Length: 280
Image 1: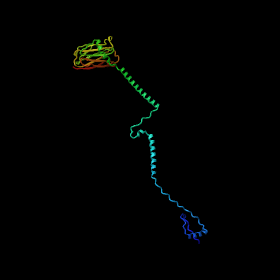
Image 2: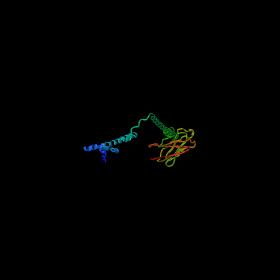
Image 3: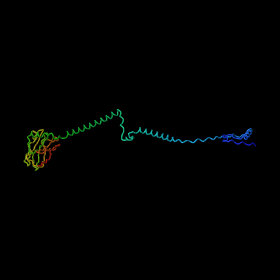
């Protein structure tokens, strides 16, 4: 029986042949013999283990730098989309002036301003017209007649006593003046005696044939007494009412300021009165 040669393994291939000379001769002789038919042995090569990876500390910084670039890009986009005047530190209350409007926008703004100005002027004109209409419809104040009182009294030959009470109006209406003294006695057209020394010396517009457009009536007092004087104005019925009639009553007394009262007969009104207080 022929002894089998030892099976060559994977490691035997890599190891160098260090057999002794005697063994080499025996091996040579044995190799002369026909080799048995054994299946060829597979050769397995052992791969060398991969070298250990060296840590790279700068890789984390690259990742961080990439995220910083992305954040900067997002911030730039937001800066362009949002008004920067609200994001500037130190300038929170400041916003830049808006860009200049286009020519059509400027024209439209100018037209709106002109329309608003014309509207205000129209409203002002309407108010002025309304006020003028109200003044025209209201009865005329007797300021002009009162201002013309001295001329009328002088033209009619009125007396100037220690105190006078005068009635003045415009038109041919027959209006009468009477005054009640503090005691209640009357000074009027009848010229009745009274205790306050009052006497009617000018009567106007009676009869109608001698009526004038600038009438005046006057009662003078030679010895006025202190107290309350009641002035009564009557619109007589011998002339039909001709609408509203304005008039004025003036009290003059030496050494004291002039006192005035104004009144109006509206429609068919016929009576009006006022009072003056006379002190010592």
